[in-house]
Image 1 (cartoon, rainbow, N blue to C red):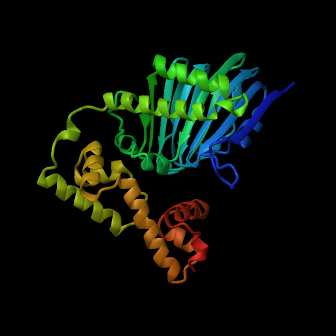
Image 2 (image 1 turned 180 degrees about the horizontal axis):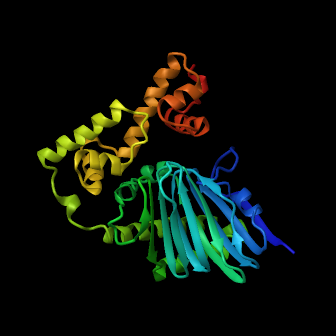
Amino acid sequence: MRQLQISERPVLQRETTSDLRNVGYDFDKYMNELTGISGRSCRLNLRDGLDVSGFDLKLETLTHTSHMKADPCVAIYIMLEGEGHGEIYPESGDETLKIPYQRGLTYISVMFEPVTGCSVLPPDTIFKGIDIRFTLDFLEKLNQSELFNQLDSHHSACITSSSNVWLGSTPTSRLVDDSAQFILNHIFGPPDNDLQLEAYALNILANLLKTLESGQKTGIEDRPLTRKETRNIEQVHALMLENIAFPWTINDLARKVGLNEKRLKIGFRIVYGQPIHRYLQRQRLEQARILLLEGLTVTEASLSIGYANPSYFAYLFKREYGCSPSSIR
């Protein structure tokens, strides 16, 4: 018999009149589609752009979760108990990325594009941990997005990566483990500890940033750009604007101009003041805004700048301009 308790709510200190906004994926739908499972799970919407979920589950049968679509975000999963593996399918069509689950590890997923994912979990096991998700905008407001933009396959924590998705893991430190245990112990209780839950979630982020930074130091980011590198980066800029609808990847652009991927990402930010993916996204949205003013439909404008999903385009447009694309016409 299925005995699974699912709950979600905003925390007390969050002032909002809107409905709960999931960061990354539809939590309630995801949990309700699980079978052969008992226990409890809860998601807290701490801020616009910051969610924390807790899982304390018993798996009775082999569990293959349904494929759930996730929007771009940074997800941190602290595995307190459990095994199995996860699979991520980038929307761009890059190869499937697999993550082996192991107790005592903290997993980091950095997704600059929508992805579809699932988990495969063995029977007769306990699956326990917390999941913290940040939107890219939230991290940018905290001035903490740059490190995530620089992560590549050469980082010591990297498990696997594609053009717009980076997956890594790091041993869970005692401090992070204690913070995760506190969150899991209190997330199912009354709202008395909501402010502490937010503090512990941000503390985990701060500690993880330090860990990732320590594995990032290769010296390449400290070297000034040469004239040739600057010209290469300007060439990348021109390539993107000449074919703005093309599904450019960092790998594509780096190969086109003969630059190291990491050097390209760092150099582009130095020259143009923004990460490549963010700059290209803003240029596409501005082009779409012009097309909408000229009379194109939302779908036509979306397809013209390379977004096959008009709903996702509308989400990005509203986030950038504060209004829906349909209101522009």
